[in-house]
Length: 201
Image 1 (cartoon, one colour):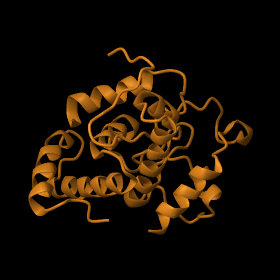
Image 2 (cartoon, rainbow, N blue to C red; image 1 turned 90 degrees about the vertical axis):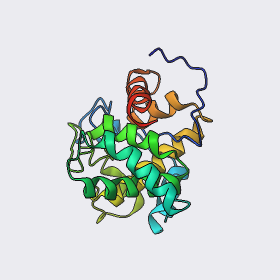
Image 3 (cartoon, one colour; image 1 turned 30 degrees about the horizontal axis):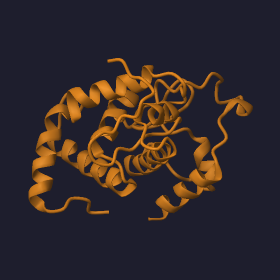
């Protein structure tokens, strides 16, 4: 799939993720080289603080049933237990909706970032399903936050992704690249959009 710099408008309000995501996080230097880490801007820091102070997200029971059943099938490739799938899907839907994102794009990001492994740790130290860098806890003054906890990880990740989507004025490839830390290239964005189209849309 060739992705150009033209704006791509995904259905609903699509949100893009930070440059802090997981396994493919393109930070050139290891965590012990702080000067090389990106400096988050004040607006994003404040946004994260607000989101962490605080969803449910479905309009009604019928909508919930339809959505959960539809997304449970592709998620079965990663999580065998049906009840665990439903619980995770509800959390993803809630946090994505709270942030103003389409839950399906969040599912695609998680698939690429961690394969739905909440204990995933990248080579540069990004953690959890949405591969959040630990320096965010210090920036927010929340050193005790556990990024391996699904709710916490999703709250960080969805807030960051939404921020970059807004920053890029709805340009999904650019927002995804920022989330991954690979701004200016589109390999990561293409991977996310491909699985979004194939498994989650």
